[in-house]
Image (cartoon, rainbow over all chains, first blue to last red; front, side, top):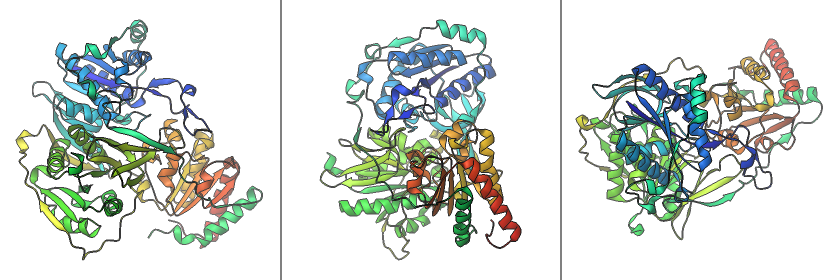
Length: 272
Length: 341
């Protein structure tokens, strides 16, 4: 069983600050981390490998050279090896161009060692789109199953896997043929503490870095900014609503006023 | 080439023969775009035994409904739905194609955009068209900042977007509205499918249903820590409200993701919304601004939450909320002043 996990380096949105003048992110204010959903994706691959008692876990990322940090982090969690595709030709890619570049890298990885399962996080916390995972699946012509909350019964002889997929009203139980691509929710597992040997391995690990020239049959017009059909037209601050009334006085007076206002609106409390 | 593409389409998501609210909202939004562009608005309805829903799609504003009614389409699956939608889009060539930003809508749109090699904007909260070039202007909060970004797709068609539920308004349905129902055949076979939905399990234990709550008490990072956040639960318990929180609160582990309100959580429109210790980042505001009556409590008089609040209290939540709880409890003992859910 060869599992590839796609991971992304993102700014830590918990810490990032907003520049009050431009209303945009001050990226220098935030450390770069492994996208939290992707950490769960790596953890799930480790779980599956344990369940089967064998297998190999590769991680794949696209980004600047410093994105090797998230591959090392994945090794800590339990991945066996990692690949980074890094090239100016990939820069400025939207989700369509990103899924194209990653699928080309996956083709190369697969050539050496056929891939059975691809796991991605549900979405990256910087873009929040969730579009790259299904995009990769389409390009490789394998079925995508998104919002997965449980992987069970990986039947190697039948090449099937049983999945729980989260939907609004509950979940679906899905049987998918392998190879397939999963995107996972955070609740699928909890991140375990990395064992010491993994930490040591990660510290010494040097991921394989590929440029665009290392990938085969690449149509360069589909890469990066050039290959991205979407562009940011404009940025704007939404019209500021007027805002309502501020209650005056000390805390007790404010609470009293609020209680009076709410008792005038008590019909709002009742279910319709 | 691009001139061949005309018309505005909406993917009609249905579950168990019931059309999702967001699809009806998108028919409302799509109607405006179609009228501006002077083109028809069409619904794309897929499923099994769903043809009778066509009239509902028309009554909410569609001129046409493309229907694929087949057993293989019974449950949503990326591979079958995607194939059907791609075939339709290649045959009839819409210029704009909108989907609800639900789990299935996002999944489907992502796959379709890849095959059609076109642009897709995720989680849109505003839609408009630029008439001269017939460009869809799909706007969404830009990552992190308190700012919106308008995404354009200039050279590819159809222009696609997923749209957040509960931000667009559905039209009043007109049952007498006339429209055309176009049934399309499908050649997919069950045995060719690589995924099977074995069963759908409804989660009946789910206690928190923010989407249907009348009164929501939401807390933010301003509650200090997990212990401070207990005040939010206590106030909610006292008035029979549902608890929600910001992304920060969920990431800190004070609440499960199901209770997150905002761009990457739930969009809700309760009757009463308490925003306590919430500064009001745009990501949060888009998830609650259409609530009927918003009460904000925050230390910072400049906090943007006050811009959308009906009533604002500038003060320390740690001081105000316990007083509120006490008042509500006393009111309940006296009886009758405020009816509780």
